[in-house]
Length: 362
Ligand SMILES: NC(=O)c1ccc[n+]([C@@H]2O[C@H](COP(=O)([O-])OP(=O)(O)OC[C@H]3O[C@@H](n4cnc5c(N)ncnc54)[C@H](O)[C@@H]3O)[C@@H](O)[C@H]2O)c1
Image (cartoon, rainbow, N blue to C red):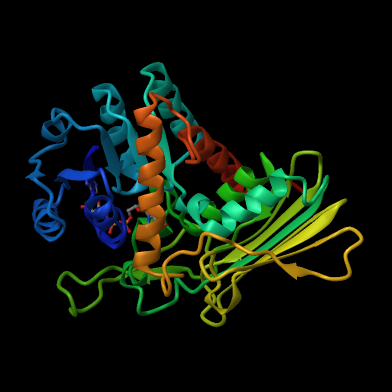
């Protein structure tokens, strides 16, 4: 499978570029970035055969798949051209900047009969796959309650260079904010595991008001402070299929004790997904208890990821390699669906975010 990558910035280097370069049956054929030096460096580092001079040149190449890792505010234009060129694609989350924009892109891709995937790679996390098996097999019975708390330090950790300075991640018109940038993976998992989620109301403040502009040169003087308009914290309510209530409390502005705790209850059983001190999907333990059982038991997960990669770049690379194989399999069978999320899923996630962000009338 010949793959081209659009956007060779921070995340592309952490995961998609090395994942494509090291996946069996997959070739990193070409890269393109509006920053030509970044594209050339990425090609050299990850062994891409061609550095395209323009998006048009890349789209004229015989590629089986494009992986779009440019920022969300570029996706309408970039994906529009990719769809017109008739190339199947995986787009980084958040795809686009609104539900209407992403729905329109999904309709255009469908009209061309193109596979479209969105990189919600946690669908390939073995613990999530085990959780889905259990829920699909009726472990919970009828849903009664889901409550997720997700706490991270991304926006306040001085070691995370990409978040230290003002960027699109902090700007709603650019597709930024904690919900699309961080919690969207877990919102996707609610829809994936429970078969849907309808947002009811939310409180989505930004408690950090401004970030400095990135210095012109590494180590230089930071630029002036620039205001933030996108949420860094949220308390959300939603309705799950069958009417069960769901809450999500999330922040990426808490410097101490990252955590992910997800409690799910039904009329036949309960499951607890606990991210432990790592506070993320990778280090999670999974426990469950069914009606009539004496106490919770650990639920075994057969398919462990390689030792020691519960977080960080190798972890993301491994999940994206699994996504690539799923997409490759679908393309091989001329299918357009798999375990992967699509633009339709992303449009539904954006719709929920828009509802949660809307002011609540009193
Ligand atoms: N799936 C995940 O877990 C995950 C994690 C982190 C980031 N991301 C997503 O990855 C995407 C990129 O984020 P990032 O942190 O790497 O940003 P970044 O700014 O570091 O990199 C973006 C790159 O895209 C390039 N670019 C901008 N406009 C372009 C265009 N029109 N055509 C081609 N290249 C263009 C920029 O020059 C830059 O090199 C975002 O959507 C982000 O949310 C996903």
